[in-house]
Length: 301
Image 1 (tube, rainbow, N blue to C red):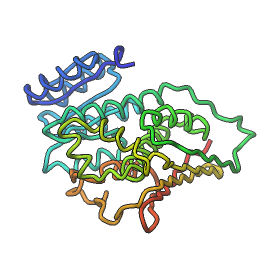
Image 2: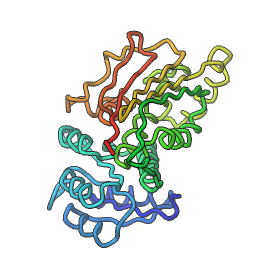
Image 3: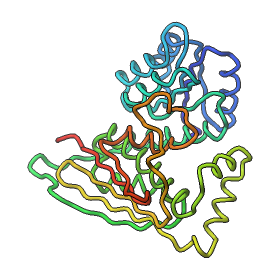
């Protein structure tokens, strides 16, 4: 998919544009760049990129203003903001406004790739044709139950199919938010729940580049490989209730960063859960932390 995707990179630092731009082109994306917010918006209007990556602090219009303007002009365009310490409140506001993701400076290759994957998932959903039921027909109640093995590679396709099943594709913005929440929480359930990978272990593995090997080793351990993740979904009218249950030992969810507190935005741990909280209406854990439940309202027809 990426071979045909155009990415607009907006940053006032030439070094950042050169370094990130080089990585994007190496990954096969078509690149366009802009040195400030106003130039970025002009490039967006002229070139119609598929995805946007923008710094937060820039001259001639900041990244939040750029993101908000793009959201108004093209609501389904995925946007990732780049931030450093001191800009947390602005980034949190952008996330609440519907920005797809954020990455912090200095940008790590792994973080950039993860952000691109999230944006591609959002773009894929936006381009999937959903269909509404006839006006005379409405869903009163329906339930789904799925069992997942510890295969992270199956999650993107599974989530896409799931959103079609629950009738979310007719609402691109909601589908994108649901996709983000489901992907992040399912990954957490497998990595940190069933495979017992601690946040410290994951951070270290990302630093030295052996996360995939560690996950595969955990998947093959006799005590872990039989574990499953259960996903239960109930749709009652426009309301979706989602419950994800793993077979791990749980975790101290009370120690997760508060998504309403900007100073915690760049904390090392809890990023996926923070993004999920911002994407859904309500989210809670059971006492031991191996079961998470969230609700999301679909727009009325």
